Image (cartoon, rainbow, N blue to C red; front, side, top):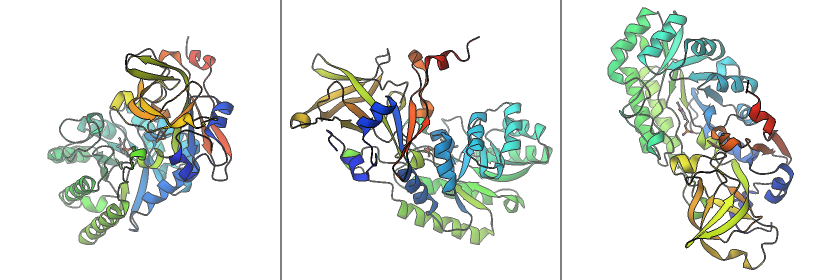
Length: 423
Ligand SMILES: *Cc1c(COP(=O)(O)O)cnc(C)c1O
């Protein structure tokens, strides 16, 4: 393809028989483009981590909730979680029956909990007060409890979800109170889960935390272990965002071997015959998605070159919210001989905020008006976190099918959509 910087997507044939320029032309920008083959490959990577009969992968729908994506994930044999009535709704639309949905909630209203009891296999509560609320509306039922193992991990303080400094989970020192409430409402503890944070790139922290959850299960009051059906170790599996720097992948061969040994050994020791779930979101969905946008203005402010695009933080908030790094590809029809001269450039969006920065001071080929840019690894926490800020319409989404066809899976919002809920 004629383009300035596209070695990564070229190597995968990401756009199949299409080109990003043609897709941008046909569907407009900003545009989320997903590749079915990459999505399926990531599902398969994780499904084969362990051959233990109880092992399974519970996709965390908050990463990407488009039903077209969810259907592919269902087809690959994964189950799903949901954290809100909306996610539950989309899981159901994508064809997941209640027995394939776990509701991993926090701070839900009684009505939301009641809805989840009807539509999910199990509901996980993450505080004593939610456990009591659940007991009041579903006495005699089965419930999961999310524990906070006291170990956190993550790429940014905002995504560390265990340890003392986070809002999540019940700490194990409250076990007596958990069981008092279970007793009070004749609830059965059918599962325990945790999620220590997002984006780990080496197996150790995750495996340590998994071992802590298994230990906790052994410390439950007599008889409780026999009633457990699900041990859910949480997500957080990282992906290499620095593709053009050759960042290595998470070693799934090592992680899989050690996880398999851990759960196999533990089942043999305890007689546990239930399921073991991992709960990744990003690992499944991030790399199958690229966000396309267009350069509309370039300028030098002082000694800095700014590249102005239609990719504001309303379309991809991760850089502004977490200081995240997304690699950038540059597509141009007539890349010519002069296309490779580089200089540091800052790619910004069209939102009226100085924090509206997608990529800061990157040494990249000099970008020009009319170029199409691709922000890599935008399939997770991309569209789902997009907003209407500055009253901009939400972007469209297109899926490149394994047979090469480009299938629109969400239309671009219109101005009428912006006023839909006004009274
Ligand atoms: C966000 C979340 C996940 C998935 O996290 P990733 O980093 O995308 O793998 C899993 N479980 C829970 C409870 C979560 O909140």
